[in-house]
Image (cartoon, rainbow, N blue to C red; front, side):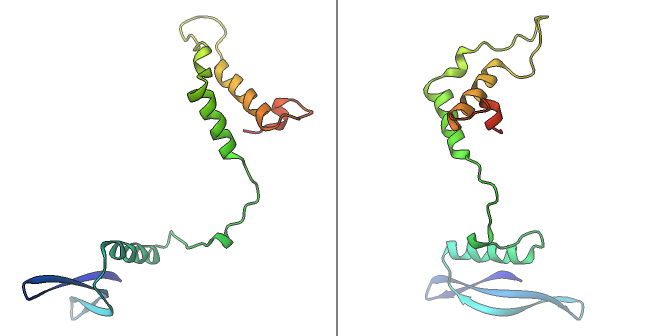
Length: 140
């Protein structure tokens, strides 16, 4: 099925009408059968119908409502995004930590000091009353 447009000229004006059509083969020729006449549509309605037809024909998509979505684990992404904004944009704390020197023969760290400080601070902010310390209560 697809959305088919039909143009008509009437008194010097051009009108576009739409229908939903289905292609089929007959006598080794491709033919179209009009299933529904829709009339004139706005560009938004035209795009919505094209998107709907694309979704219904695809085997990879499914339709779900808000009632179908069940949250088993709740993670606080907004809290972390807000803390990250404060850390980098408002306070500029990432800039005070030195960047790791790749050329020196000193101990090479896999995680920069700025990231470790950020993780520990975020964990303490998100769960300040932890009895087990910062990393015991924070899973990133």
